[in-house]
Amino acid sequence: MALDEVAITRTISERFFRKFIDHLEVDVAIAGGGPSGLVAGAVLAKGGKKVALFERKLSIGGGMWGGGMMFNEIVVQEEALPVLDEFGIRHTLHEENCHACDSIEAISALIYHAVQAGLTVFNCISAEDVMMRPDRVTGLVLNWSPVEMAGLHVDPLCVRAKTVIDATGHATEVVNVVQRKVPGKLATPSGKVEGEKAMWAERAETLTLENTKEVFPGLLVAGMAANATFGGPRMGPIFGGMLLSGKKAGELLLQS
Ligand code: 48F
Image (cartoon, rainbow, N blue to C red; front, side):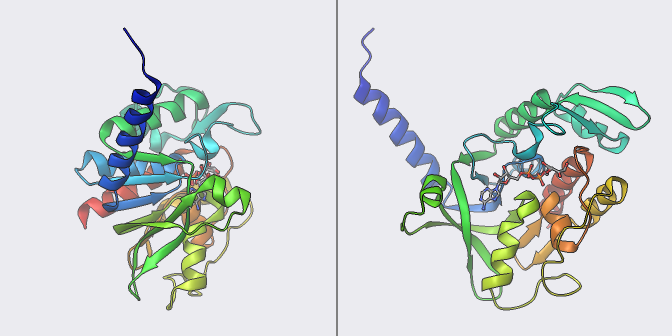
């Protein structure tokens, strides 16, 4: 059977641009492909929403691959075990309330099931700004990550979304852009990003869930970005809060 290099090129190009054009207007656009963004995307896709996730890096998965300090195991507490089971991730009770998973299995299962559920992932794309109208976030402004990394002066393109989720982790990049560039205040006590606090795993895990909510019209925060926005502490390599936060973000949007 003959293989034509140009046919291969045409297949990739046509399929990619069809996918991109098909996602220029979505129900939900998610910035960041860590555990919280992936679970949110999976819940929304399963609920029948059109949802696109944009991840800066080549690989999806954020901070989950490396476990703690590159020891590739993660810990998940009791409350989040149903999420592990939903995604088919195996877990073992190691110490009291410390259920352990192989981080590679965990993140690959999240990615696989989210994409199979209908989440469309675009990697190597960074959210550099938001669209506004003028008191609401109405989409993401995107550019290729290599453009950003090389510091090239190339204008971005845009995707319209009914809601945006900031799941960019510790950096909280979308909320920071909104604080800097969109008129109005965030729904935080100070009206600004409160900033992440130092390590306190138990409190952080509870607060991550509480902090998963709308922070500006049209913009929700999930995962570590929720804690950084509302001033919660960090929690290190325990991931139940990230999984439950993604689930809550997805369910909140399905209800609305
Ligand atoms: O950091 P990350 O895994 O976020 P998360 O879902 O989970 C946090 C945990 O990994 C861990 C923790 C809790 O146990 O403290 O840190 O909250 O994933 C965030 C992803 O967002 C990408 C980034 O490359 C990472 O993969 N990202 C960050 N900024 C942007 C972005 C951006 N502007 N556009 C696109 N992707």
